[in-house]
Length: 229
Ligand SMILES: [Zn+2]
Image (cartoon, rainbow, N blue to C red; front, side, top):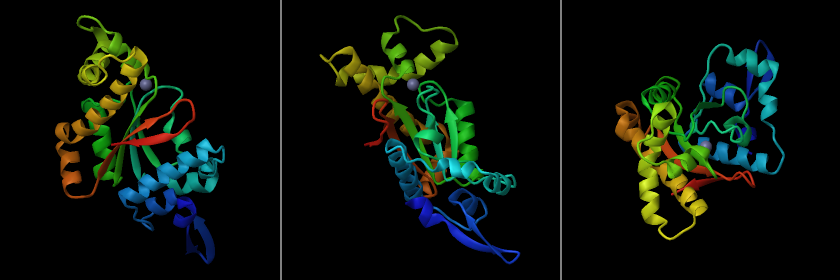
């Protein structure tokens, strides 16, 4: 288990204290690569699926006190606001481990990009995951949209529309539920690609090898997270 691997022992005032991954990373005792961060997320998801979660241990008083001095989350998650897909739970993570940006349809805008830039550049998170999920309501609304969507929800739909257009070509002849799933996958991949196009900071960090971006999808039925290619 990654967490166990990253638990490190340090001597503080003569006492040996076990540090969690989050605290060790925040204290500078641990430097995690993007691949290790990804393994940490996927291992946490396996624990969640197996109903063997341990993240609650990382919400205890010592962890909270240690993290009060600063944060250094090792992964950034851009995910949907859907109440069934809370990243801290589905990846079995506690305080200080992941920097989560949630918005319906897991799409970027300047404020969201700024949030991701802050975590990547100033907090040093080496991994960005764009996470979509099965039967996403925002993507379904974009599939159902007719004419020019207006208002604030229209802004969400307009951002997802390119993925729907792409999916209509790829899923020609398929049922609407199948079209929605293809559009969800396309939306995640288009958003992941847009991060470096719409943010000079993220583009620079990726080019320097300091940040890696991955796309993933959550299965509402069995709880698994699958990486998209
Ligand atoms: Zn959704």
